Length: 584
Image 1: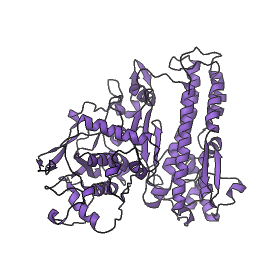
Image 2: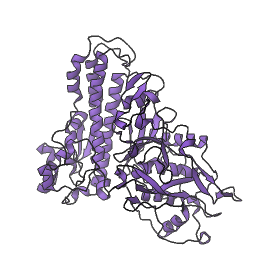
Image 3: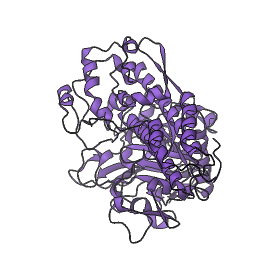
Image 4: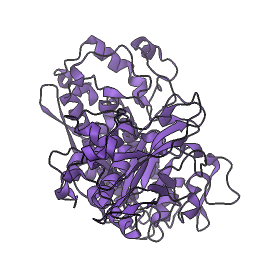
């Protein structure tokens, strides 16, 4: 997630030097992994000799974010989420971005998952004359090979304030966005609640409530993924957008694809910490220059909470795994509790509607995957020779593998398919128990679940481009059945990326004996859903064939919803008392 980009000419280097004022930095302990703040190449630029071009100027016209600004930021994020844009660049250039007309010509917008919250916030601040600051140097608490997956979390030792250092010397908005691409990673979200070491992080953990979790809230998965909430439905479904190293932007709803973890890893929902500009002077044109940016401490944040980690009950759980989440006297699964806590009123699960929505979302995820693989093919990764070893960790790496492979994306997809099956069994169990939270007014739940699933599945067609340019179609059920055969390896042909095994479908795949051998040997890695970032991989073909530790599992989990319905038929009573609507 850290990368440097090339810009034409010297403008970027000059602008970068003028744009940022690094706050005073602490020094990380010797031996810890650390991420240094972005540097300008040690240029010394006198603002008298360089002026940011007019269209790129970041004028600071307000000294603090007001509640109105926060609501407007949420509306900005919501509009992007509800649009149909499919890349971050397209999102900011489309009609859903009300600020697009003020962007200079030739702008290109990029964000991977960790960049996305920062890029959205920085862009909005730029366009609205607001102060902005971000963590630009973090180090591990203890020792860690990779800050993104540090066991005990991280701390901030350096921050960068975006300031007008003297009157007329405006920061360059484009350069700020580019610097974010260069320095931000998911390490910036990995911290314990209430951490006191170092400087303040940009975010803070929030209570689980409808007021605290809102458009603009960040969701952090300690397996190395970040998303941004764009809408909270009345029934408690939390909708998010996320972006990827190939610059694609996708959508989904919160669920078990976002794992819980120990408190120092910082999993869960976070909001931006309020900030204000202090000690600045107002120029003749009304803009502010000089000063420094201060962040609100935890004690000043009304919605700060660590209940995501330790539960709602007292006495507090000593370990996160023992946390209890109770609503109106009833202990709930964490994910059910989150949904209930942010819903308007008590949640009643309409099993038919829920099934339809989950299948539609999975269909979207398959389409997003097709888009991602097309991007990898256009980049020519599948025509390159197979490397002699896998990366040190296939889930957390850099370079072409990070940009074009799909092990993490595929793991989240597999988790969602398994969750669909588990939810189906849960609905059948709720019917058997005559659970009042099940809103179903039919007479045969297995039959109706089957019909809803089949109707949605038949409406979903996945199209991928074969090696010879042909458009190949997969039904939803075909894709589900192949799920654990999908290759995550960007060096494989599109046919293998989509799990082809039929000789006729494979006839267009140019991969030779070596790549086919690697595909076969990676099966155990494909069988697992857990993203094991703490495992050293770097496996050779021989290692994979030998099934060395850390190279996966022998069999995949079950994803067949229709078989789950057959299994669960005995759970449901002959008739179910009407409790609500099952409209899609």
